[in-house]
Length: 301
Image 1 (tube, rainbow, N blue to C red):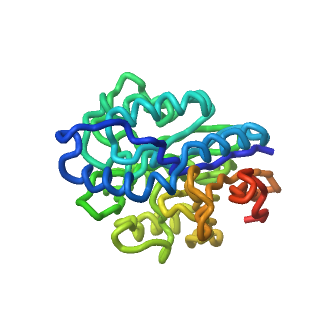
Image 2 (image 1 turned 90 degrees about the vertical axis):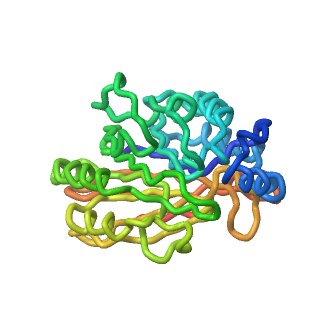
Image 3 (image 1 turned 120 degrees about the vertical axis):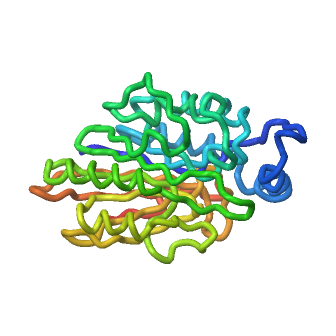
């Protein structure tokens, strides 16, 4: 049995100080939103409790599906890099970016460079410096029986928009990768920030090329898709060649307990059963009354 932990959208706070030049454009709206509302919804002490609880649960690897930052300040990326080191080494933790990690266009050196070891496939060349948040994707990491496939839907968008896009080039690379992985007997788990199933989020927050992504999965298949972005639990499905493919979203890892948005993380246990995989899911969720994380849901996907 192999156990994968999934967490997402930690939105690590507090925001560092920033001057008027850094806050020009879209960042100003995000800065105001953080101080008026979001800093009360995403709490660092809750994130710390989640990591403490995760440390007591047996697991073999961690998948983190984006939105480590809030308005993509360089200082936020540095803080997130330090936080990632407390979560685990780059061989123990796999990361993809979210839309907040591409809130504005930034040079690689002051943004994602500090996380690249966590976002690099087993066969990737560490000497090649990506130029944008979707370069270097998809990556492939083999952990236990899993083929972990990381995608990036992160790109800068206009104010009030939080859409994601994989793009034609990344979809073409994914097409080739899934074709090569077909029938290899391993469990294929795809990580993506934006939800790819229909009807999960509003048009301003959607994955713009979700139909093309779903068409690839209908042709090649996969065993599990994990995402973030919506800050609450999601269980959906995408049609695959051998039946429905589970698509699961987790709540924010730092969210307060309110209206179903309480912080949570998921544990997936993969058990080989002949030519199929039994996937058991446990949701560990914040109990706002006690401040502890407890098992809120258990199911077989």
